[in-house]
Image (cartoon, rainbow, N blue to C red; front, top):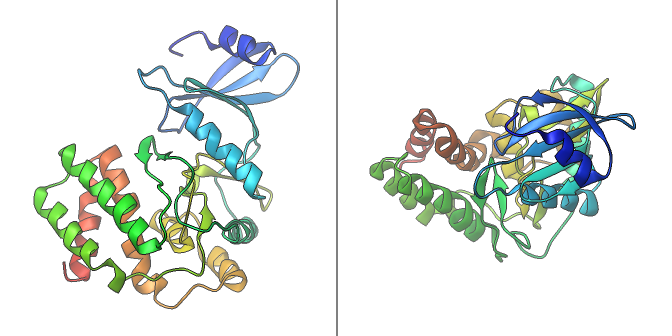
Length: 285
């Protein structure tokens, strides 16, 4: 623990904290499970870096709680350096019943609508800046504020070769030939991979670490396939509730997964460039 969080938590929440235990995960700050004297546990994130931004994660969790029925941890305190949340029971093991429940929850989330794509403010994905200016079309939003934004940053940070960057731009020029406009902008969690979902006894108990905005539900579904968060039980149940258009699994999911691959390239290095290269090559770029 970089600092003694016990007195900080006690003063901030007005409740006495007794002990802290480090938890794994989290790209932003250190994560702790904190035992409170008045009973129960909470989860605390603490970011000691020069420009902390945990208040953005707090905003996203509160946004989901206020605008949807998605189960998320109630936020007890949110500031740039400290985020305190109620502890949710569960782990990241999903049986068929839990996957079907996840499908119900995400299908309902995707029915929450906006008039445009984006959000009232920029957010984060894995600690990286995620711009969300309101945009009238999905193609424009995905091209400019997802693909090209993340690719340009990867080039600036010298984690992407210039030749691959040029191929992404050439693909982006023809993006409307490959993806479609959805019926409406849908509220997205934005980062549904295994350790960001909790389950217990065949039910989902919580979604954590969001990267919220209004977009096309297919990008959420694509991300789920990239890291095998859920399998056939999830997709069968989701399709029964919100039919998935033909061509998604065969083609569009790989195109949408260019975005998380770019994110992971910036976060974790060049090992993710091969997936980007192969996806572009399959489309002739």
